[in-house]
Picture 1 (cartoon, rainbow, N blue to C red):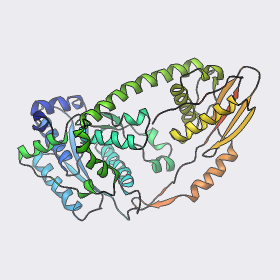
Picture 2 (tube, rainbow, N blue to C red; picture 1 turned 90 degrees about the vertical axis):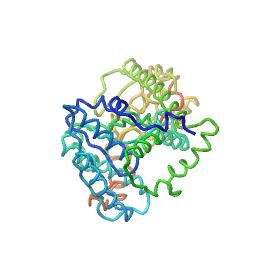
Picture 3 (cartoon, rainbow, N blue to C red; picture 1 turned 120 degrees about the vertical axis):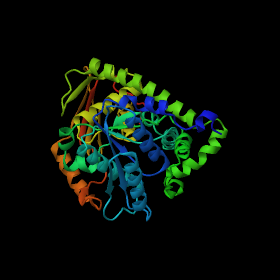
Picture 4 (cartoon, rainbow, N blue to C red; picture 1 turned 180 degrees about the vertical axis):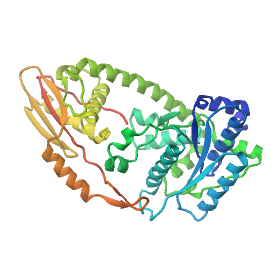
Length: 408
């Protein structure tokens, strides 16, 4: 059961503290679905701004995914509340046919794309969402169930970059770099959901109930049903959030160590396309976590597909380490279309990470085109799983790389 203060409404003084870091913004987009959490965000943000002589312009945005018959009416209800509070409101709709599988992930991608467009229209560099302490706990539990590494267990941050829509970056690779970055801000991440519900009850404000939040077809809904039982064993939302904070603290320390290692081991400055060259024997002496992250950074830097998937990176690293331990003089592997070569020589070793040869990229490009499908939400081409486009050539001395474990 929540403590007494966990069930109390959010006071004006608390709201002032929660929103204080946002006072210097010129405009803020509020993502309001009409559920209890986001409705409380709208109410509290509006009262906070009304109490200030100067401050950011607020724009409430509701994304109507069109997945339920009630969604259009719920969006209009948000608009009526926003007008009462003096906050401009926009409804943006997900048009077209919806995918038969991966519905929640697709809806999330569309939601962030539409919110980003609304933010740029409003000249806002921050989008506020109403994620709560309970959402953080559920995210940690989901990541644990999937075997996430340390980075995954960090869960959500108070402030993070707006997720990039893969299909947009695939179709227009220079567009994201030309636009000002947009941040996601989660002012309620340490606030229990019950307090937001109490805030609305105290103000006499109703909110929508989304049945998908309890739909057992979705992982989050199934794990949400486990939370009361886990809380009785001491694993309540605050415990999960504490784990995330401690993981984030360790994550920062490890990332700093990776940065130091990159400077110490790199034989030349890193460039956009590589090659990146490390001293292999010194690389082998690194703690496995630091070595794997350093390798992953180098792959992400020289390729154009972003960070490599953790499991595949671990498998590659283990294969290279095993080949070195067995005294194998040459090993050739591919990773998502990338060429991986291990050469063992008697001299000083180097670990080189560079872009894959063009012939491998042509094969991957043709496969990617075959896997593409139409996105009914925007009539654009959406790529399937993207191939890696990095080659890794490893030339070592007698004591080359060793296997280990990483993150995400």
